[in-house]
Image 1 (cartoon, helix red, strand yellow):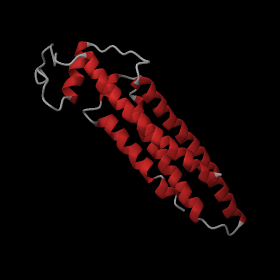
Image 2 (image 1 turned 90 degrees about the horizontal axis):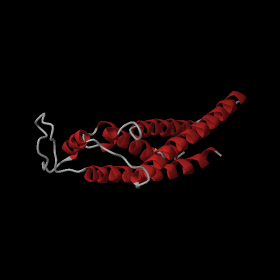
Image 3 (image 1 turned 30 degrees about the horizontal axis):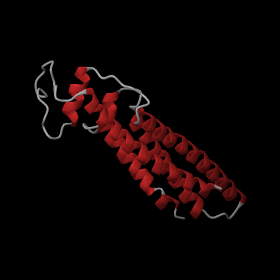
Length: 178
């Protein structure tokens, strides 16, 4: 009976993280390019699969079995629950693995100076960048590629941590189907 309550944190957490990574102006991951920009979308997909699993879990726990057709519907719901949780595990594992690989120095990324300036202007909360309001070529020369990479790696480490937590939730919820 408690599977929807158990999956509330991953549903809200995945949706919120996906929204932040996709739409927040301070998200460096979107500016990073296609190699990791799918992480935000995958968080949103994971929120949907967690939600669908929670609804199936609720149906499985409260639906009575009064006839053969009820039993058949419940069996189908259990199979759908297991398939959805396996899909959720794969999507959250992809988030975890991608975030982990890119957060350590395994993959080297070269930013163009124009990208560095654009990213620095969007994540600079202390207003330390110069030239952000202008269309000048020299936007925010105070930030280096290393500074932007530190922010990117920090965001990816946070994503990997959340991915690991949600992966544990997915594995524990999978036990409900067996």
